[in-house]
Image 1 (cartoon, rainbow, N blue to C red):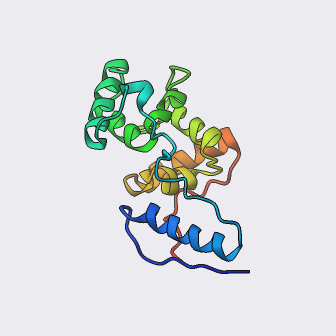
Image 2 (image 1 turned 90 degrees about the horizontal axis):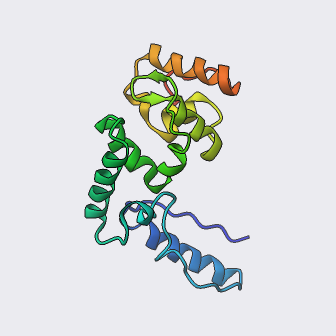
Image 3 (image 1 turned 90 degrees about the vertical axis):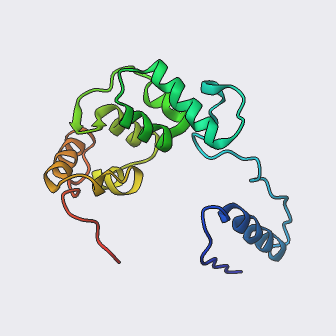
Amino acid sequence: APLLSVWGGKITTFRKLAEEAGDGLVQRLAEPRPAWTADALLPGGDLRPWIGAPTRPDLDIQRFLSVLGQRHPELPAAMRQRWARSYGGLLTQLLQGGDLGAEVVPGLYEAELHYLHRHEWAREADDVLWRRTKLGLHLSPAQRSRVAQWWTEHHGAPATAAQEPACS
């Protein structure tokens, strides 16, 4: 089978590189299909239910933050900022129940942990701390242990979040 490896690139070019790689593969597989990602939105990228018609990405995120602050003034500004950038339009699902639950560690509530388990396939505390939110970079070992303990109690995954992630 054909094998393709793509090295390098930046976030500003990843879509174009992926399209070119896909074009090369479908030609080799004799299954030509047109590129479809140019207008595809990333998960959470559709902010229209919150802000209406998009204009410019930098302005759209500011409008989104403003609307989020108006609709949810009870959320701390730093959390609104992090959630807006992490979840975008998917915040509707995260905030669906209206109750954030207990604050497990500063800035991380039960509602977010349950959301990540249900909708983003987080299966252990390390998924949340290192791969989904990167909060592990800002928490102490004791706080990471608290998240791991909470996770084990609610989702039954191994409590491995107290350690730094292994480098390979």
